[in-house]
Image (cartoon, rainbow, N blue to C red; front, side, top):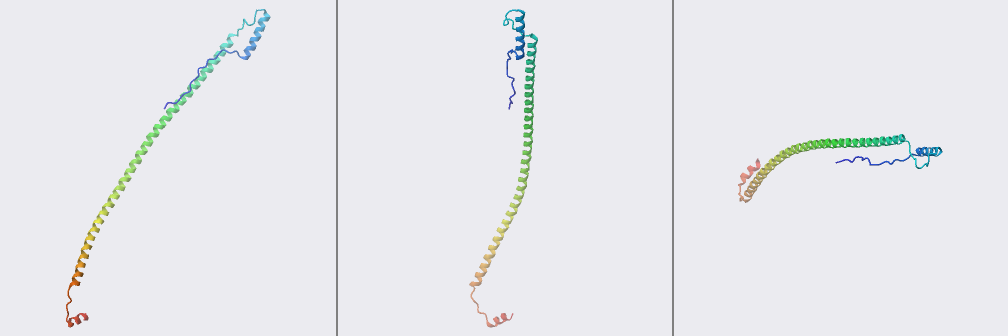
Length: 170
């Protein structure tokens, strides 16, 4: 992602006469008229050293503004690089933590799967044992049923009275 920088606007400065210069110029014009040097509007000239110092001041200001803008742009580039490095570092750390979490999650899944598998085996064994007991119980019930039927079906046998007394004595 590209960050915008600050652009130095292109400004052309027109040579403008400062207020103080205008006063100086008026004084100069007055001096020329008094000296009889002719018309005042024909000889409007400002001292050369003043404009050169003004132009150099403007150039210094332009250079200083350009330096400040370059410093701002450099700072923004450094900030952008810092944020990019931070984002990349954060992505790496998040990826590492995610992988560790996922690995831990699978370890827990494996542990629980083993426990569930053991419990399922125990359950299957107990269900098989219950099925065997159920089969044995059915066999016992059938045996009891057949014994009961055998007891109910037998004709009553008359037992001599003597044997009955003997049974009663016991």
